[in-house]
Structures are given as structure tokens and as C-alpha cells.
Length: 157
Image (cartoon, rainbow, N blue to C red; front, top):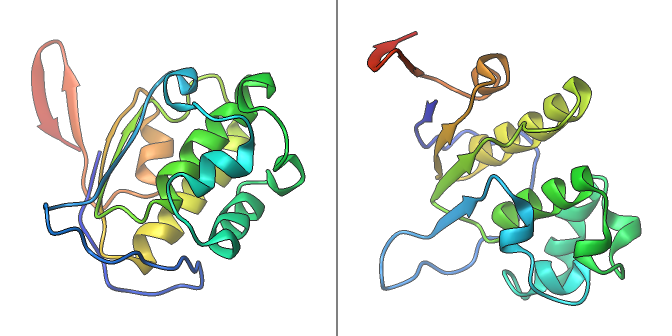
């Protein structure tokens, strides 16, 4: 799945950080969220990526995690850890969002909510997205183009 940047705004608001002089701000969502959660609380994970507490809480609210702000990240359920890992990516205000199997282990309603949050972020920020996934329906919710690999061949869908 490939998503080009869009300047269209649709109500999902995050405060942008200043552009880095070193290049493109990139966020990567690991397939296993345990590989990207390092701090002692959910809010600390968010603040490590964006110092604006209000922005962090807004994203936690969007992802259904606001009530867990003081919890230890690795003590969360697998689904909550996945949502927290995605939230840390979004709050970092990337220009390129790389997602590795964001739907893994999630029920269809949760995947729908998560992809909707990603779509709103992409629609309101100058951000491109590349997603590796087996969930084509989830990817198509946010994609404006897809490439599919089957038996070693790549094709447009």
C-alpha cells in the first residue's frame, strides 16, 4: 500500500513540530510493538516523541488510550500496545509513515478505527505512508494506490 501526501484537512488535529534540518521526519510502526515501547508510562512514551502534552493526550484520546496514560506500556494488552505504538508514530508528526502489519492480531472493528485514525492524520498533514500488510481491505481504507505481491510478482490493484 502506498499513500502520497495530501494537504486536505478533515478535522484530525495534531500540532506539527518544526521540520528537521537533517531531512525527512519518518515514523516506523514495528510489527511487534514491544520493540518500540521503552519508557515507564504511556504518557512518557508519547512525550518522548512530542513535548506538547496536549497533543499527546489528544492522540491518546483518538486511539482510546487516554485512561491508560499512567500505565506501564508493556503491561498493556497486546491490542493496547499496538494502538500505543501507532499513537507514538502519529504524535511524532512524520512526513513519511511506515507501517508493518498494523492490523496483526486486531479484530475488524479495531482495525477499522485504527485505519480511520491514520487516514485522518494523512489527510491533515503533508505525510506519505507505505504499509506492508496482508490486510488489503484495511490498506484500501487509506490508500490512494496499492501494489500487490503474489508469487514473486508485483502488480497494481
